[in-house]
Amino acid sequence: MKTFRFVALAVLAPFFSACASGEDSVDLLLLGGSVYDGSGADPVIADVAVAGDRIWYVGDAAAAGITAADTVDVRGLTVTPGFIDMHSHAELDSDHGRDARAFLYQGVTSVVLGVDGGGGSGVAERLARWADDGIGVNALLFVGHNAARRAAIGMEDRPPTAEELDAMRAFVRKGMEEGAYGLSSGLFYLPGNYAETQEVIELNRVAAEYEGAIYDTHDRDLGASYPSFGYLNSIAEGIRIGEEAGTKVIFSHFNAQGAHNYGRAPEGAALIEEARARGVEVAGAHHSYTATQSNLRSYTIPSWVVAGGDSAMIRRFDHPDTLALIDRQTREMLAIRGGADHILLVDERLDLNGKTLADVAAEWGLTAPEAARRILRTGNASVMNLGLYDEENTRYLAGVDWMMTCTDGQDPGPTRPVTHPRAFGSFTKKLKDLVIDEQLITLPYSVRSMTGLAADFLGWTDRGYLRVGMAADIAVLDMARVQDMATYEDAHQYSEGTVHVLVNGVFAIRDGSATGEMPGRPILRGGAAFPRTLLAGEPAG
Picture 1 (cartoon, rainbow, N blue to C red):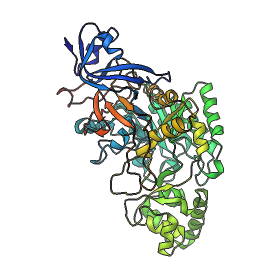
Picture 2: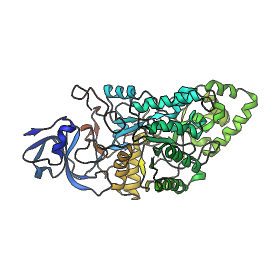
Picture 3: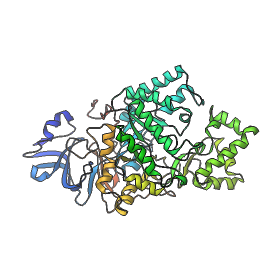
Picture 4: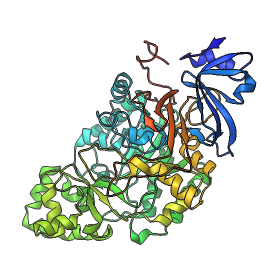
């Protein structure tokens, strides 16, 4: 009898295609589930065998003579590859977020971090910490334009000097050398918003020197920026940055913002389709919520006011010649976003958490711009913008074949009673709303958007599909019970209907309960796992 446990893929590979004859024993058998392989193909009823961290066999295990140390009956359940969160803020560096439980309960087994331009250049250090400390899901990193700019020139609103641009190039190169997947930008945010397009192209050219590099962008204007850059202009800029540098492009949380852009998703999608037709590999990721989450300063204070940093901003608040202009422009910014009653504070300050900016202003006897400035004097604040996305736009985008799925979310822990539900329910909500209830898209199509499509874009060759030889990242769902439980009023509720989740062959959720295991691995560009000393007592390739 042969037993296979934590054996290197190179050793197992010769057996995969021919497994198995006689009596073969593996670690785990999932028996009789409806298997969706991640390609968009229709499901098949099959057993899935797992040996160590790999999928060993898919088919009729009894006929193949396969037995297992652990057998789980999944008849009547849906078996898929683990979901890939293509734009995440999972807090894997914090005690409360390291196990990624909110994500696992959605079936997510891999998350993309370092996004919105915020990824640092110390990629290897962060990956090593995750490898040593353990994380609940697989994770990868981008290196950020905003982080590079801040390191080189701070919060200055000006082009970089030649020397500063070289320093920014070096920042990006260091991150890429250490395994980053590409350059991320947050051109809506500061200091990224101060950059001209050509600056970002120059930095993306550094990323493009590395095979498979991706430009991941929170583009400059999804439709609610101030002053307006233009919804379509912003998409065109993002495509240009990737096309001229020679990288793939993915638009983060791609959608159109603001009531004035309701129904305009097809226009933005058309620009991406045109770029794809001429050979640019462009894609997007989205979630199904109508609210955004960001920060109060970005939503209420024009970028010129913040030039030079927070101290300079407060000096301008106190200057009578600028105060009237700031006040007027803040009102204009709030109008774009639906008014102060649409700005919900989800900050860790409990006297603010769960109140709208309009509520706080009334409580303090101030106007909304005055209340925003008073809050910002003691630090920026996390906020949601309610109703900024249009459900019809989201439905349209769910049907385009280059659209992946993301949470854009973080579980901030118990310090914020009110927070965005997207970290707890994005993938489940898409399945429940668009597949089960509305039947807008099929389950095979939706699973592809959450698995194989993302894996292909990331350049992975051994994750994202439920096939022999692939990493055993697997989700088992009860589609009759799939339900996102998190709400805007009570976000800290895990999704239901997720029965089992395996990450690298280890149960992270079993029978609907988290196991407390930390089987996630940091993933380098190209798909290799960062060496992990916790596996077999020595580094793995």
